[in-house]
Image (tube, rainbow, N blue to C red; front, side, top):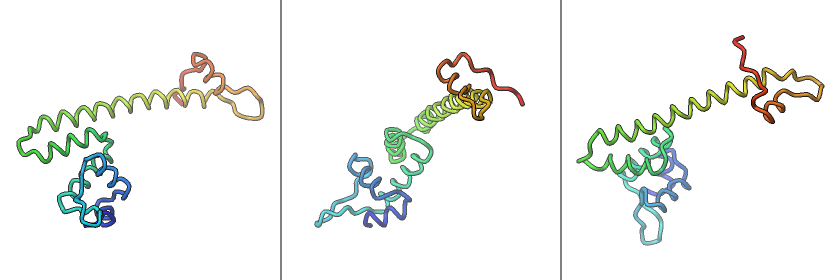
Length: 137
């Protein structure tokens, strides 16, 4: 299968497939004229990586998961540990984003807007301790 067909089959861009080839993640076979050729196993691996990336896994984690997928002697606990680590990182990011949301919400709430030059948002960005807590309205 040629790279354009693989892109359509996997939902990846040709550029991504080339990159994954270049870093040795999934390497198609080069034919006589230098074009990359991919078989069904390559397409499956690329689809797997695409789904992993959609879930936010880093490329190193994608490589580890792909290696575990291919290794029939794998232990499910190893897969679960990697996924759990990623889930914990996502949970931490969500917590951080919720804190940012509260802080920004407070700044926006404190700003009266309008035509005057004074702005609680700018004041709060200069001195974070001056902004009030968000109200429960």
